[in-house]
Length: 245
Ligand SMILES: Nc1ncnc2c1ncn2[C@@H]1O[C@H](COP(=O)(O)OP(=O)(O)OP(=O)(O)O)[C@@H](O)[C@H]1O
Image 1 (cartoon, rainbow, N blue to C red):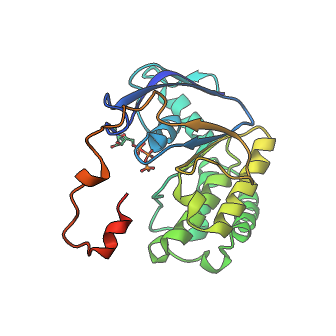
Image 2 (cartoon, rainbow, N blue to C red):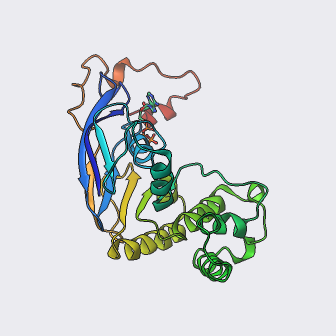
Image 3 (tube, rainbow, N blue to C red):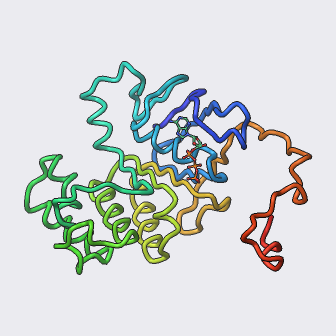
């Protein structure tokens, strides 16, 4: 369902001196893939690529049997994007619409019947405990509540591919449980989920395969970069120096 062949993904040069990792990967329908790795290892870049938000600059990417390269027509691009939901680290919304209308928007754009939109929106608002915010504007909400709205909006369409970046998985335990439970139900019906986290263990609520980034072997440790060679910031007191790695 998602197939990458030697697709170049950016990675920090502190992890791989060449600054790019060629990734080959196949994720089937109904599969859960935990994408793990340290900061700057390319987790978000992978999610954004599968979300079709980054150009494919080499190798190949196939999503639901469509080659997602430069020859992908805008019509197919739009159709694929309607089947892919991405819960990004900093979700964007239509600021002039309230919470309920933002959540309902993907169904509106898919021309779903009004009665069905109303029913599905009410149901997912209750599931993510957003009843008290339905009429609120997004810029009046906290970051965690905005993430809950983003989760509701992403899942209301029952997408075929669900991509989740780290904050929605770590900020709030109640949100995490409801999110993972919903994704587990969708994957049982054939959806594919990719979830990015720095934690190497995934989450027992949503068992799945792990992909550890970066993919090629990291650069050998620099023997000169020892604890003793770190320059201690002037604001640290002698007691604070125990905090240094
Ligand atoms: N378009 C781009 N062109 C070049 N380098 C990029 C591009 N996008 C990201 N990078 C670099 O690729 C590396 C990986 O970034 P990415 O955001 O994917 O990391 P991450 O694993 O999600 O990190 P974190 O856990 O900190 O969110 C970073 O060093 C980043 O600066």
